[in-house]
Structure formats: structure tokens, C-alpha cells
Image (cartoon, rainbow, N blue to C red; front, side, top):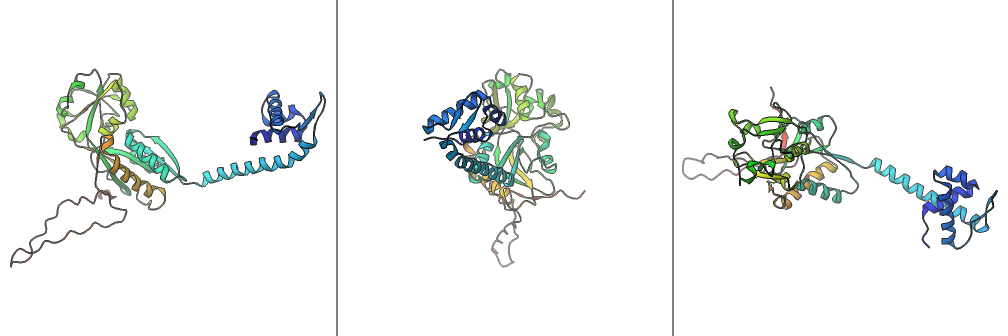
Length: 348
């Protein structure tokens, strides 16, 4: 026998009111619908639960026996709902802000949600200028944002996840859409979508790669990645984004043309450096593992392993002396393992 708690709830309301109209008002449903549900319950149980006349409703002996059982069943379900609400309120909440978006970013969140099922995930698209600002203003706990240069903000941990080649987004009928690639000088005269002339809305570090006479001209003001895509789809302008973002946003009306002489974009995971426990450090590890496995599939390249918060840079071995005059000088190159650190703003 397939009974539902909702049917038992309807039965209890009628049994307590002994009046279908008052019970329907209490349940906020139509009287006719309530009558049909109770009749369906009686058919399922194979016995009448109420004796009805035009002026009177009363419980049958079967209804009287069922009432305390139904109350317990309905109360138990209410307890489950109450517990679920409390558990959800007490669950850790992580607000993930994304500047732009790609299939790789979605893959990171999907794996994190599977690995950390008790965490309540909230996703939001951020405006171009809102990466670090959303952390400072408590509108996001973690941010995924592209940049051609390492973010340098005091108290913010920046973990490089994957690298993307810069591409020019144009309408499929744009003259540059047929090109195998372009250079920065080729697109200097294009009308760009961006935030404004002073804060271009292009990934940080990209606009600095142009010479002064080739700097992109921001004609169409936009605040978000989606707005920039809409400008390109309408044939009004062009926009610079990363190869992974391009692979995650395929559209028949858009073409993504590689830009050969601009620096690669790195997508960074940003969060406040004081966060050392809970879901955020776990998400950092998950994000790096997903990027390492899936970067190529989404048109990106993996980067080296980031250092953990507080981890000291490993020392490099001193080479042996090659002669009697003592040890040779130590030649120190860039340390590829130092990819994420507590980036501090130098004192001004």
C-alpha cells in the first residue's frame, strides 16, 4: 500500500475539524480537492474513514484507530523537515564568485560539491572590477579570476590553477574571423567591449602588453563577461578572453581568434589568507587537482603545484666546488614551486 504523508496530513485535518470546508481552509486548498484526496486515501486503505451526511462528518471506527498513528507519522515528518532546515542553516556556506566562466571552472565546482556534500555552495557571476573587491566587501568567500599578472593584494592568497592562451572574440562575419591568428597591432583599430577607458574590463596585465599607440579603444561599456559576449554577438565590437572561456562558450555567431603576441592568462583562485581550515582550503586542493587532470580537455594548460599557506620555499642545493679556489657561486633561477604565496603590497 502506497500512502503519502500528505494524504495522512489531509486525513488528520478533517478528523480534527470534522468539517471539510474548515479543514480545507486550514490546509489552504480547495474543498473539492480535499474531498477527492480523502476519498483516494479511503480507496487505498480499502475501508471508509468518515461517515458523511449533508450536515455532519464523523470518524468511523477505522478512522478513530488510524488518527493517532497518522498524527505520529505527520509529526515525524515535520521533525525531519525541521531537522533538515536546521542542518542546512548550520552547514558551512561557500560563496564562489567567478569573473567570466568556463567549463573548467564548472568542473571544479562540480567535483567540490561531490567531495564536500555538506557544504552549501553559492555561485555568482562577478563584474570585471569585483574580483578582490568581492572578498573585501564580504560578497564572496572565494573568487576565480583570470589575470596576465599575479594579483598582489595584502592578505589575499592567490593560487594559479591553469593558464589560457589569449583569444579575440569576434562576430563570425567579422573580417578577422577568417584569420588563423592575429597580433596586438592588428586589432588596435577595433572597437572593444570593456568596462571603461581607465578600467578596461580586460583581464589584468593584458592592456599593459600593448604599446601606447596600440592600446585597445574601449567603445562599448560592459560590466560582465556575458555582456561583452553579447556585444560581440551583435557585431558591435570585439573582446579579449582566454582559450578555456572560449571553449566553454561555443556559439555559432562567435569566433575566437588566437592572439599570438599577448601574454597567457592565468586563472587564479583568490581567498583571504587567514582562511586555513574548512571547505575553502579543501576547494583549493580540489581545484588544482581538477585543473591538472582536465586543463587540456578544456583548451587550457596546467601550471605547477602551488605551495600550501605558510609553507616555506625549499632551499636549492649548493653546487660542488669545481676547483681549489673554493665553491662556485650559487646561481638561483626562478623557483617553479613558488606559485602561490601570501602576496603582500609593498609599503608605499
